[in-house]
Image (cartoon, rainbow, N blue to C red; front, side, top):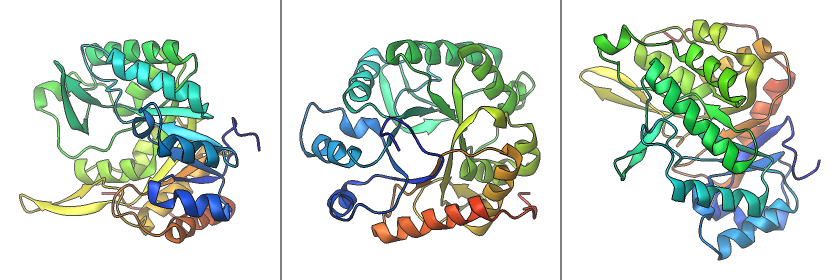
Amino acid sequence: MPRNTLPNSVGVGLKAQHYQEIIDTQPDIGWFEVHPENYMGDGGLPHYFLSEIHKHYPLSMHGVGLSLGSAEGVDPEHLNALAKVVKRHQPAQVSEHLAWSHSNSIFLNDLLPVPYTDEFLNIVINNINKVQDKLQRTILIENPSVYLGIELELKTKAISETDFLREIVRQTGCGLLLDINNVYVSANNQKYDCNEYMNDYPLEHVGEIHLAGHAQDIIDNETVLIDDHGSAIIDDVWQLFSETLERIQKPVPVLIEWDTNIPDFSILLGEAKKAEKIMTDLSLERVNCE
């Protein structure tokens, strides 16, 4: 497999504590994904290890800081730094979240949801176009995880999330990164059926799938799911993944995300093997996300 091609197999997130083990053992894994923000320095060990690992595995870069929903536009310094990392390491794929994280030069350590209105649709489209022009490549956009409801007056003006994503693709030519765990988390928190969401999702534009674990919290006597990427994937998310592959009817790259409480590398490999098994042995049972 060429290093500039992302295979339609399972990859895992690359973490610093696993660098040496991966170089020493060259595990049987399809590819690795990194957050480019961790490699925006000019030099040092992170670049060395990433280059060594890239000799044997394709890479994907999944950004967390572009803030595509920011009304004042993408921060030019961040975009320049991203372009530099992409040029240096030549990942097979680049993706970013449908979210915002900075406003009026104030940067927030979170990925906040974008209002699905015509105004913000134009903002996101302009920002995606700016990023793609700078990188000279198309990127993938990830659906968000949502915790709170939107205000009634905003909801009456809102576009559905699936139509919002569909229109982004139509007007920018970008692809989509479908995060299965985000769908499950949002559906439970927002009290809608994730199967109905999937039925309306523009699956024909999916270029990558993410799988992850999540946490639970109790807020105002209600259970809220938190997308923390800090535990094993639950059975319902595995089931939704299986059903989604049945809907897509084409092979796509799949990533195991585990960004907090990071376990031994063998645990990540075990999750990857589960995903590989599902990709070859699909179930048709439904999962209730209400």
